[in-house]
Figure 1 (tube, each protein chain N blue to C red):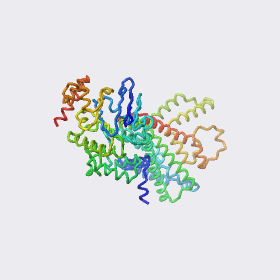
Figure 2 (figure 1 turned 90 degrees about the vertical axis):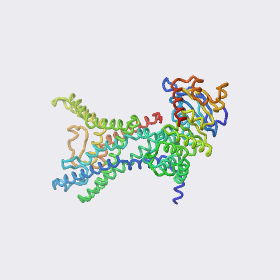
Figure 3 (figure 1 turned 60 degrees about the vertical axis):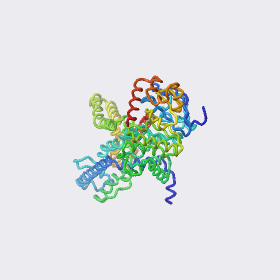
Figure 4 (figure 1 turned 120 degrees about the vertical axis):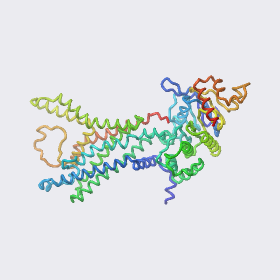
Length: 268
Length: 322
């Protein structure tokens, strides 16, 4: 293993009774990159993320995040890692600013520090006009953007986004993805981005890992993946998910899922 | 000066507690609870005052513990204040706690909270602390209101001894309501739907107020010895009856509060003729009353802590997925 991996997983395994959700996953993520974890629903992406955050204990294997073991020192990991869950929840009867204040206080920021940081982040994610509005009145896209601001409150080294674009309309998705890329470059944050949509992952990620049924099928730069896996085939084929699905012998549901998801977004 | 306070990093636990207290006070449920409690207070004051008016002059003159009547006397139309509290207290506890954890879970805020650099038990501890503080405020206010109204209406200030009794009654009530609060927090960890956990809590409460006495009666009826049975058998039966009743937390509470507020209560369990012989009827000093209900007090505190441990453990073991 190289030293410059900020997230390292070695033989990571999680079993629920007899069901294996994650099967000896070995993966390293470099500092400063945007890594896409691509896979269908139920592939075990969320389980991997929960284990990275120390919210679920792995059955076997080793995790190191900034050199820290999240199983033994979850709080130290949570100081460095921001996590945006799939369906991010806020206190609806509090305003966006108040929600961020609260998270700031849980991270041990002082009142003035939390306030200035929250205001700056809200501006960056483009919610300045809604800053004092109750979150209950926010749209889904606004909530996701507030979620991004929320994750950045603790000034993290890594942010983990679990299907952050679910439920946002296509133009909102584009905006949101651009926001992620911009913020990650500006703040120098490593991003782990989990998604079931190849199209989205392609747009923002430096490297991609394809994760199906608890196993990592391939990982690398999209272009390199194309070259190594599709020798002799036209590179353009990679953009067609059906080619990937066929290549890896993915199951039928996955195949259909990708096809549907991809076409839907392309049409818009 | 203000600047130094501003620059200090906030303690995550207490800022969590402040937020929770704010949530409790802002919620509509709190408004309803305050309304119900205010009505209780007014109603029991009314019954106490009309009850006191009906007392014979002879009963008042040599009674040094007259002020406690504010809490215990009733004109018969409505129950006295302490009976009211023993009835409403559990409901109050259940209302404060039934959606503690599951509402966070359903809103999706729980996984966000747990992704913050705070120990996991901060969540449940802060929520319990906040509800406990709200409870304390509520009950202290109510007791003080009754004392204040009593001062205005009857014009006799409470003696120090009465004050000690009133304070211990208030503390006991808070702990007793915390018992039900912990039970409902436990259900809120176990059940995903707030409605289910509320109903589970009410079911337990109904069981102890309605069905448990029924069941105990059934058991006792089956075991009742004939009136001509030897004295030892009769005594053993009475002892057994008393023990069985002690298993109900509401019974523990009502025994403890009535002993604290009615100083003439000298014993709770069965006594033999020899034990009664030579006793002079009269009020017990407060220390003796406390000594008398010490088992009940420790019992209530123990059950309260037990329920807290249950909810703590089940929360710590709960797997949280968004």
